[in-house]
Length: 166
Image (cartoon, rainbow, N blue to C red; front, side):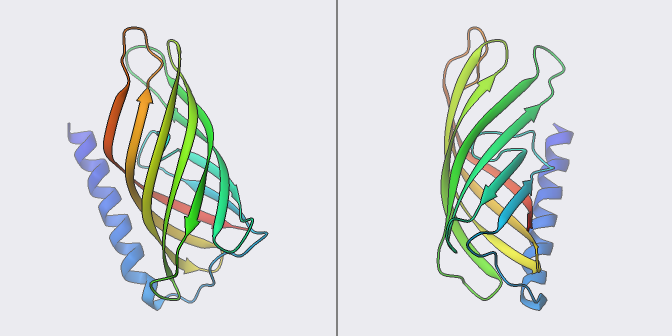
């Protein structure tokens, strides 16, 4: 339980620091043709909030991406998730803060093979050119790929991601 509380505290502190520093930053948001590499270090990964993702901006506001999620378990098989999704950015709240929404679908491999689908919304704070911090919350519907498991609906899946743009 303490591990989850620490993780949530670190996520909240990181998001707060990113959002508070956004008005003082001088960064341009990514544009069509840019690549995005995202890292979610505070959560093992899910369909809506993967551990690692690689995206490509097909326009200034739409970014399809591929992702992998890794979750080590003390008991049972480790969980590996692979899939794809899309982020759609809306009009910016400021020059450095951009809201977005999106969805993803993936295959989950644990003791057996399962699936997941997720939807989310969040905001991204541009810190410097080529780097941002984003926070999001959403919903995952997951068949975890384990024997005897049923599909779960996880409401409130939250994450903080560090985004690098090239």
